[in-house]
Image (cartoon, rainbow, N blue to C red; front, side, top):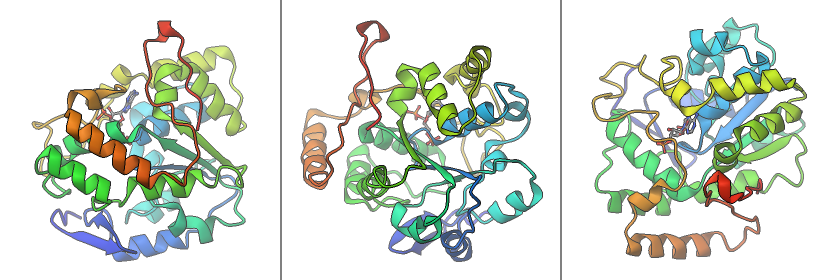
Length: 301
Ligand code: A3P
């Protein structure tokens, strides 16, 4: 399946026609979750791949064998992509680990009543838009990125592929009070204290690990390990689909990189849109991670 120039419109959201079809998107909405499933949910560029790596490592008690031999899209396929049913059908893994970028309102009916464990990963949207911009330049299945100014406007309008970050974030995080099977964790928390984040995820998954196992997980999902692991750095994907001469999927892996990209005016505009769109969201945002020595804490919001 190439379909690099195809865009699918589904429930007023654009999805890349590469890997997404009307049928695969529709199937996702009625997916029969099992109570043992683990569902990783994120808006793109929020730390999805990192969480896939963490969950695989936790399930393997820190043993990196699976991470180093099976691509992430086979270990934790995207629910809405066309190959998902075939991958899950061929696997006997328990728990099944599934990934999705779909917004809450689309999955709510099929998730209702399910005890599947849902992990929502979010990231400072300013870093998300910068990471997504760079990814658009190398991903031939995404529309032209244009200038950063244009791209930022499309992000703030919610017209990029995968829809509005604001709707996605609010839709999922609004459920944290009512869904005790939903864990919200941030990229920033993982950056600041990966060891603590892994313990939090393993406890949520009811898969407690001994200290050595946690340490092994930490070691194998560091940025440098993942950057060099072809099962997760997307270099298995051919250049016609992802042009590796134009960048790297494992790009910087930092918090606050937006400061290298935003102008003062763009930041002011972002802040004004953010304030207006998030007025009905009373979560605390801790997205500015300082040096570890400064002992800043990141709370899951
Ligand atoms: P950058 O482009 O800012 O470097 P996703 O998997 O949701 O598409 O997110 C990709 C982003 O997560 C990229 O951000 C990538 O570098 C970052 N990332 C992936 N693994 C990471 C890790 N182990 N540590 C820090 N950042 C990581």
